[in-house]
Length: 344
Image (cartoon, rainbow, N blue to C red):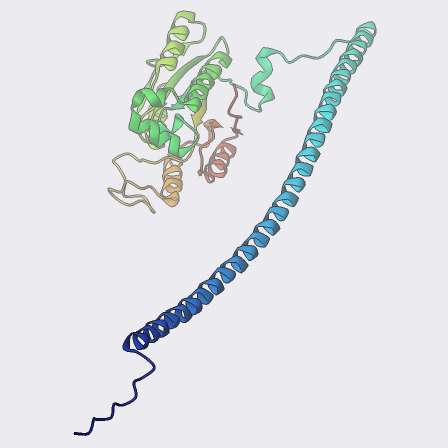
C-alpha cells in the first residue's frame, strides 16, 4: 500500500490564537480606560474654571466690602467731629445764657434802684385783685357756685376718662384735671367777699349743695369744713346742667351772682334722654347736636338778669362748648374764662 501523504502542519498553534485574542481584549480595555480618563480630566478642568470664577467674584466682593468699611469709618469720624463741635457750641451757649442772665439781673437791679431813688415803687398785683386780672370778679351779696363733678372732670383726654371709669371711682379721683377742678372751686370760695354768703352746689346727674345752703364767708369753721369736703369729692356720672339750673331757680333767696365750673356741653337732661331735638331715647351715645340742644334747653329757664361767669376747663373733642358758654355768659353780662391746665 502506498503511504498517505501527510498534510503540511500549521505554523500557529491553538495557544497562540488564544493569546492573540486575549491581547486584543486587553488592548480594547486599555482604549476604553484611556477615553474614560480623558472625560474625567475634562470635568476637572471645568470645575477648576468654575472655582477660579468664584474666587474672582469673592475677591471683587471683598474689595467692595473694604470700600464700604472705609466709607463707614469716614462717616463715623465726621459724626464724632460734629458731636464734638455741637458739645463745644452747647457749652458756649450755656455760658452765653449765663452771661445774659447775669446781665439781665444787673440791669433789673439798677432799674429798681433808679425807681426807688425817684420815689417810685415797682407795681405788684394785690391778691384781692387776682379775680379782676382774670376778667372775673367774684362779687355779690349772695353767690352760687355750680361745681361740675361728672366723670369727665377727671381727665382732659377721653380715653383717660374711660380707663379711669373702668378702673373705679378711686382712679377718677386721682385724675390730673380733677385736681385742678377742686383747686378752682376752692379758689372761688377764697375770692368771695367777707360780707357775702355763698352756696357751693355740686352737680353731675343730680344737683346737691355741699355747703347745705348759704354760709357766710366770715364763718371760717364752716368754710374750712366745706373746702375739706371739696378735696374729698369724687367725680362720677354724666353732666345734667338742667338739674343745676333748676336748683338755682329754686334757691331762696335767689343768688345775685352765679359762677359755673365745668368742662363741656351737658350729656343728660332731667328724665333721661329723649324729648330734646337731636337726642335719641335710651342711647348710650350722645351726639354733638344733642349736647348743644341740652345746653340751650337748660338756658331757657335762666333769667337774663342773673349774671353767670363760666370757668371752662379743657376736654378733648368738645370744640362747640366754648362758643355756646361764651354766648350764654355774654347775654347775662358775665365772662367766659378758660384757664391753662396748671391754673390755679
